[in-house]
Image (spheres, rainbow, N blue to C red):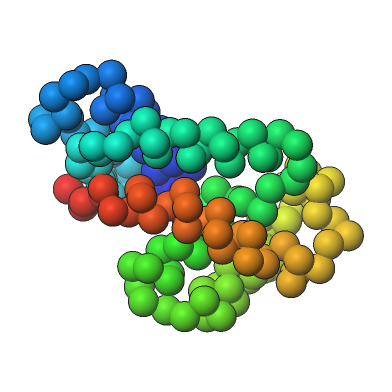
Length: 146
């Protein structure tokens, strides 16, 4: 289960919740090869969708400090695993660079184009933290392992 899978299912779930007036029975089940998760009903789904759209609009005007899998990893490390932001930042930075065994996220041609001459401190800055938390914390609040 990757961050992009979670985010896609979350958006579909928010749309589903925004279409029905009785959300008490609306759940979304995401099943992946390694695990599954269930999204519980969201009362203010339209507000959550609006927040995601605002972030999307911002990303249309300039490179956004948001990388789906890395942002998910950062939010998970800090808010679920209880690690500090510096420790989570080091984990994310390692995934950005990659290793001999795993290709780094920075090797993605689109990310490379946008951030090739940017320092690590400028990529994983307060904006990255804010964007990661604003997308994934509401998602985590409505997520339960199934």
